[in-house]
Image: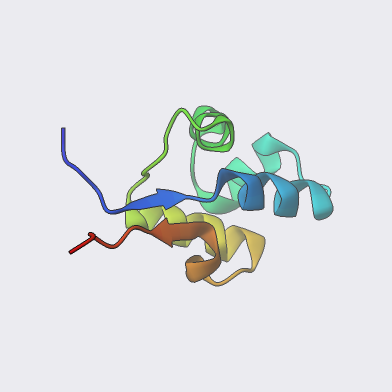
Amino acid sequence: MMNRDYTVRAGVIRLERTRQRLSQQRLADRAGLSIGQISRIETGSIETPHFDTIEKLAWALELDADELYDVHLPTP
């Protein structure tokens, strides 16, 4: 499995989705993703989705992609 140096901010996705009164299905439709992907990202089952997935979510939620992930820098 590939080690990725970022994680997605699932809480931000869930919070923004509910703030916009979107169901998981509606967000999935907007982003071109499956409802299963949305659910797994929001629950933390998928911690490191591909950058294109983050971009799709950001576009669907009208956010900057930088708001949706945390970058983990290596410690020296």
